[in-house]
Length: 203
Image 1 (cartoon, rainbow, N blue to C red):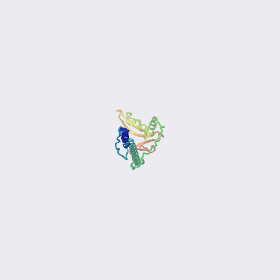
Image 2 (image 1 turned 180 degrees about the vertical axis):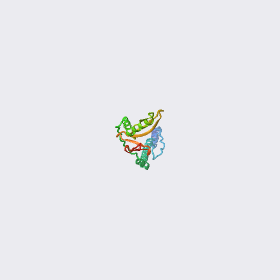
Image 3 (image 1 turned 30 degrees about the vertical axis):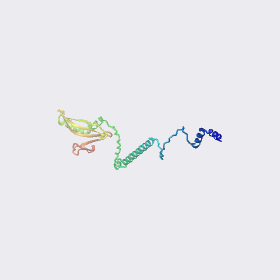
Image 4 (image 1 turned 135 degrees about the horizontal axis):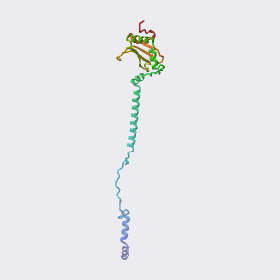
């Protein structure tokens, strides 16, 4: 009996006790290293990288808006100037175009001189002065001016030519450069009159 119990005790080994311990401590693993995971903060706004695309878009939009406003202002200012009363009055006061007809000269200078010098009244006066002065004073004539656009005639002056080289005017004539019509100057009325009405001698 004793011998049988001793045999039973001899069959009990520490390994069986270790196996029993392992069965009780199934989750114990002394060689395993535990990893620590720190608690993360939950955020409803995930982090995003900042970009400048929105700033560029805002700048371009503002630039286009500024140019548009500037163009609208200039168009309004230009239209206001066009519609201003001063501009309308300036348009109304536009100078009229004056058409000037070219003057045709058909009578030359020598012809104008001869037509005056050969007048009977002038020849009579020349003989009278020469006779009274015993030949010391002579009558002469000179074309004073030629025709222009505003003055289409010759001016012929008849004068006394003295020995001391002084002159004294006697008659003035206006000769048309296109028709050759002669108009003497009336010294009393101080205007040119028709040749038919001219009577310098009073007889």
